[in-house]
Length: 146
Image (tube, rainbow, N blue to C red; front, side):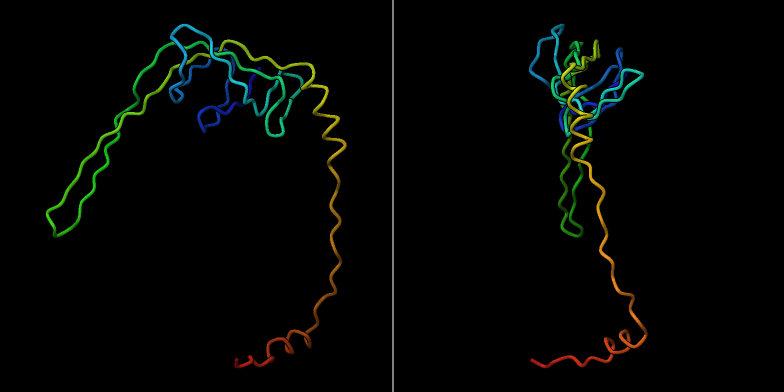
């Protein structure tokens, strides 16, 4: 069983037991954090696709720790002016472990019915083929001076 979730502007493919470092969430260490932005879920036999999210689906995570990410250095300089600036940044992160993936029965019943009702093949418009005479006529058209 796996799911694709959206947390903090990033998308992750997760399964039970997966550890993630996500942007800091205001949840205490040891508490559970529910992610409701589930884009896709698979139980091994059926794949459920959201539009954009699955209604009633959740991924339950346990918060392991709050920590800081790797330090990134930003260095700016202006040539021939003796001007330099160095700035470091460490992103606050939360380490979580995925415990469970839950997909509601309403999500499984609604998605195929909606998909069958809304998907229609698009008809293409037929265009007359351009002949050599029309191509030459378009190329010789003088530009107006206005």
